[in-house]
Image (tube, rainbow, N blue to C red; front, side, top):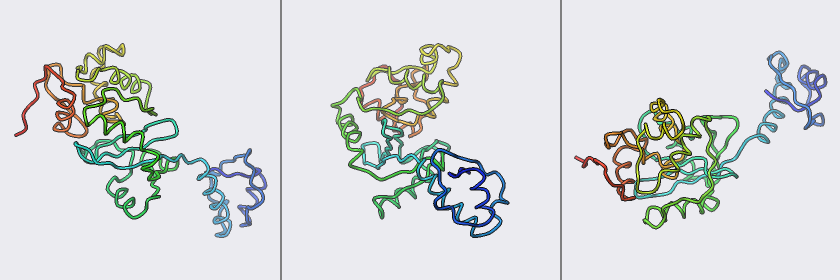
Amino acid sequence: MSLCAPRGQAFDLCRGGQNLNGVEDENIRITISSTHYFAKPQGYLACYRVLRKDRKRSMETLHCTTISSPVGPLFLAASAKGLVALEFDARLPGQQSIRPNPRHIREENLHNQNARTKSANNKDAVTFEHSPTQMRPYITELEEYFRGHLRNFTLPLDLRGTQFQQSCWQALQAIPYGETRSYAQIARAIGHPQAFRAVGAANHSNPIAIVVPCHRVIAASGQLCGYGGGLHIKRQLLELEGARALQLPQPA
């Protein structure tokens, strides 16, 4: 836990259960690793108040909203840099999500337009703020895409992942609208021709569906294969884009 205060003074105050008001120092941070500094209840509460205040200062707020679309509800979240997440409301079991509990977040947002929720991936660093107005530029481009009027997204992205994942996601963005690539082709494109399985894993971890078009990656045979939103949505997106030379299975 982090605490803003001169080292010796903070420890003494915590041990003595005194109030820490007036001893905060923005430039000095100490780490408390033992609970004996909080032996007295009032000392614990005083430290907790400062710790909580400090944590709030370091939290990142992501603007978010949920919209309707031809492929079902979509959850969007963006930082000051750009879009961080675009998720399908319904995902396959095990599909990662930036949200701790998507259904609970939707319920909270219905009752509180300023709902804030911790992220499952970084519980102490990220909060969400329901902000339809802030998300309007992203919504507009998605609406144009689904109308068939937009082929290339121009909205800024804030992709967060490993160096390998980033290289895979960049390769996905290079696949032209209406075309497809195999996992092996993506692996060769990023300079790791034998890493097609790792490419598949990076696709599975893609946090920004549709805009980072992992739906354009298919099996070498031309068959559709795994997609976080479900194969029926993958098929729908490819048909929207007019992808050719695909062995698209007809729904039963």
